Image 1 (cartoon, rainbow, N blue to C red):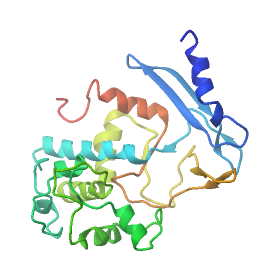
Image 2 (tube, rainbow, N blue to C red; image 1 turned 120 degrees about the vertical axis):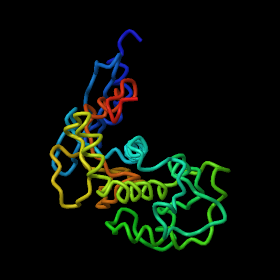
Image 3 (cartoon, helix red, strand yellow; image 1 turned 90 degrees about the vertical axis):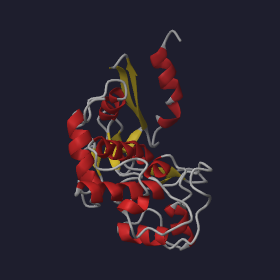
Length: 254
């Protein structure tokens, strides 16, 4: 297009309307951010606009950091992606098949998603349950959805289990391990792990969802489990993270 900025503005127009939850767009080319702009509102309660400095919940993109933590520990010789999960979490149920860390990372484990299990048990999603509550639900399942490796089925359960493996193998919570070995190592100064519901996060954008008859509801979650989600970041730090896929600076850099 002859005017890429105008094209981006057009795409983001629905999020720029008065009273609309917004978004932030950053465009990276050849390792440099060539465009960054906020649209709409970051906080509808207080009429705070979205800017490039807004910090948003990146949700399941956190899973990339969880697997990177596992890969760093593998590089250190402390585990293998092909380890049996029960080697690190021996209380995990014994099934007829071996479930590896690789199965968890690739959504091929067959382990049921704990969000589904929460719903079936009548427990509110987004509440701040301790990790033990999630593990109790996962461990209580007598069957898998399918034999490991035979299908791909998205499962958040695999990633809170991987975070628990990181905790046991490294001797520190995954939030601390990833903070020191990924965020700090890359200079991601604005990204934070939301592991404390009372934590104040500067420039934090609120979460919203649409109402069927128009308007929005506030969708803020107070859940603080780390692994399948849990990172808040601005687009600048995500650009740093993206750049590391092309020129790695983590671990032994191989």
